[in-house]
Image (cartoon, rainbow, N blue to C red; front, side):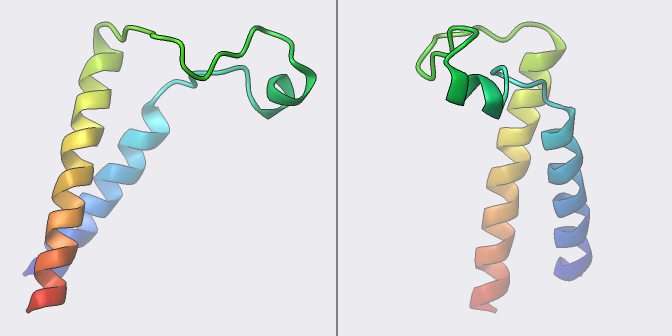
Length: 73
């Protein structure tokens, strides 16, 4: 039962992390210095981005709890 639940949570975590929008210009912007890349910028998420971010956080925590529970059993 826990195996199936862990697979569903894993798939949901992968899908939610792929749905998130990129926060920077990419790796080329980091090397060239273009685009004003600031890793510590305080960016506010709004609307669907905030919902997806919160869901990803919750599913990630659930994933780690399930892994720990399965390891103990």
